[in-house]
Image (cartoon, rainbow, N blue to C red; front, side, top):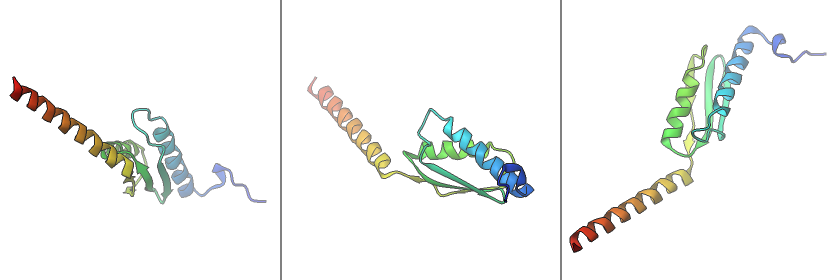
Amino acid sequence: MVDHSKNSLPPGEQEDRRIEEEIKRKLNAITTWDATGIKVKVKHRTVLLTGSVADSKALEQSVLVVFTVKGLKLIDNKISIRKEGIASIISHLASDIEAMTDDKDKDKDQ
């Protein structure tokens, strides 16, 4: 019978598991942006981040959170920005531009 508990792992794998669990705990605690689409794998203290987030700010902040975890050697960031995130940004920009254009036209009429 094989014991699969955390303590039966070789020291390097124990450290990988600790790092992975801490990263997941920190990402799950985030309430300011949605980090639920991020997947984490750790091997030889190298963190592989995959999945997606809504925008570049969420991507940058998520990587910064991971960076705070002690013991990791390298972060391999493969997180992508969801297409709907980009579409949403473009949509907001379009409405902002339209609102500015409307304000400019009102100023001209006065």
